[in-house]
Amino acid sequence: MSHPEEENPSGVSGRIGSGRRRLGVVVSAVVLVGAGGWFAGTQVQSPADAAASHQAPKAGPVTVAVVRQSLTASVVATGSVEFASPRPLSLAGPVGSGASASGADGEGAEQRVTKAPVAGTKIKEGDVLMTVNGRPVFALAGSVPMYRALGHGTSGDDVTQLQKALKRLGFDPGGTGGTYGQGTATAVSDWYKSEGYDAQEPSSADQQQLGTLEQAVSAAQETLLTTNSGGGEESSGDGGSSSSPSPQSSTDKQVHEIQVKSAQKSLDLANDALSSFKATYGTKVPAGEVVFLPKLPARLDKVTVKTGDIPSAQIGTVTSSDVVVQAAVPGTDAQLLRHGMTAQLTTADGKSAQGTVDVVADDTASSDGSSSATDTSATAGTDSTSGPTSDSTAAVQVRITVPDPGPLAGEAEAAVKVTIKVGASDGKVLTVPMAAIHTSSDGRARVKVERDGTVTEVHVTVGLSAAGIVEVKPDGGALKAGERVVVGE
Image (cartoon, rainbow, N blue to C red; front, side):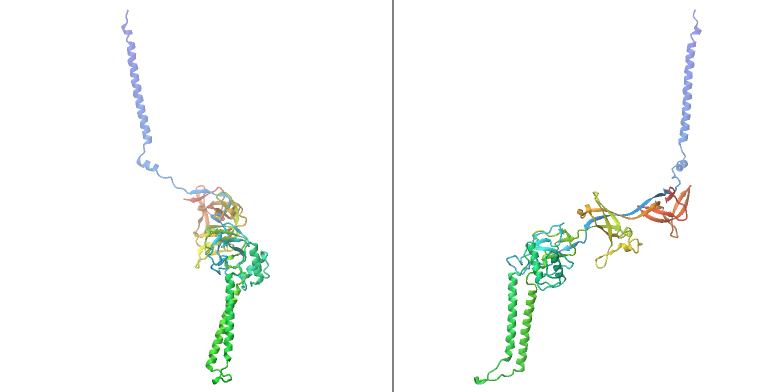
């Protein structure tokens, strides 16, 4: 038997399930819309709120901690390695006598360098620097420069220098009184021979000129005698009869006196010319064959001539063998330097040596073109108005001697880093940046210390400074490491 009413329940259940699903979807949508509205409401700002959120935070002081440390102050500069005492080198005159234009030994010919000097050579006393026309140019020690030929009869300090040099070289001139005599001539001749050269002896032209001058003296003497004897001639009377001497007229006597004076003057001039020539006659040292140098040994630093050149100007530069470093530092740093301070010198490739501050020279030229130098032992450490320079931006030249150059000996013209220690703290001290130091109206230094959000001023005494850091000592106030000082607002 069929029961229709029992077949409907399954259809009723399908409708109920479908309605429930639609209700869930609606509720979910409402929830999502509400959540979206809440999120949007929390993220959207009013124009006033947006402007307030972009304002910079309230400014506060910029602070740096006080540090207790050891402090070393140094002046650092760049310098160049040089050799000390440079001086130009030139010849004082011709090499050889130059008396003949066509002598067999080449005297008088155009001067030509036949063996050029060599840069870097160490020069000792008696060394041959170079040769010109095959003749030597010797180096001797002496403060008076060679300026003339030295020969028989010459005298002076330059002759004394020559005689002392000959004695040092082992050739005794018989005395060092400053007059060139036979002993000096013999010593010169022996010295030249020991070096493989002949000393400059009188040439054939010299001998010929000596003979000419001697003949001139003889002729002048004969003229004077003849003139004198002419004053006592006897005159004969008419008819050839014997006559007695007749007195000269006053006019004849005046003429005779003039003739005698003229003859005497000619004789005097001839004797003077002969004496002057004999003064340099014989074995001599030509002006160009010796160069006197104040200090030997020396170093031939630069050479400006080569074989075949005419040595008419500067032939080079000579220096001492001592190494120095020339550096330029600002005027404010120069005021910290003192004579005798130690300088550390370092090349780009790591070679190093120690030097000593020798001279601090003001780079300002004086009215005569020279530069003034200051002995830093007396002026270093003074204020800017009385130190080596009053312009803190002006470059000041500093010379550093290097007693033991070591690896720097072969580094001429090399650049070096120069570090000069000018002070050090006594152990560890309180330090702050230079920017933390302020000056009160009374001229006292002070720092601003931030403590618990409050800024307190502490007066301090400023000490050593280095690389932007300065030593401070509190005056009557408290200041300790770790506290923070204001360096900017």
